[in-house]
Length: 304
Image (cartoon, rainbow, N blue to C red):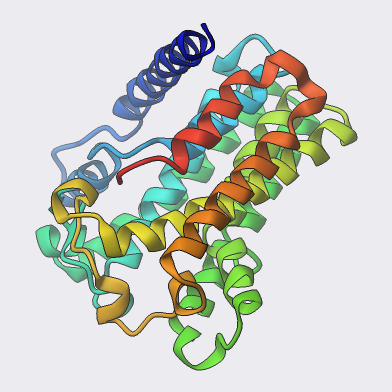
């Protein structure tokens, strides 16, 4: 009976998750209109990466947090898609020869291999601009102080004290990361900051209390570190077909990862530990948080 309930919960979650992904994809498909003008290649380059698939984790997290307190997710949708555009721009830049030098992303040629390095840089820049253009327009339409707060949180989490700072720490890691605490700090910025701001943004938009926001921040911090450890594991044990990019790139680029400090078995145990801690942080929400609970389990049991 218990096993049947577990299977039913997973199936219900998959329906919920796919529904949110479809809503996000429908919105993203309409954001960048390709025009026949001298700069037309930039629209193509932006859509090439933005519409190439992906888990849509960040927008789904934002919507999932919003749903705990609000019922009209379309108010949150522009901000959710802003997060996906910021994430996509970061991937385009991350793949560049000056950074990770990856030729493939999501089973396709990386943006710079398809359009050249200059256009890839500009496509990333344009996606960042479009993200804030989209968010600002939504905030104006909502005429809400909470919406302005959310824009500030998104900007901070993608800047020098967030994702960009984490990328710098990652590139400098070969020389500066000497302990697992240093590594966790880098992960908290590069991966965790955007995950955390997605969750926090959804909660604030829906009018959550400070205690509720704090609980969700803890959830986000825990799944952020678990997600990144799982990434480090997959870079070793997965395949190019499943990941959509070359495996072993961390080793090839002499990057410090979780497996530089812990064994594979210990890393897997830590993924489970952080996932359980994330789930425990949602206890104040009761059954309302069931999809976020399943989402935490999904992220750390994935193959790509």
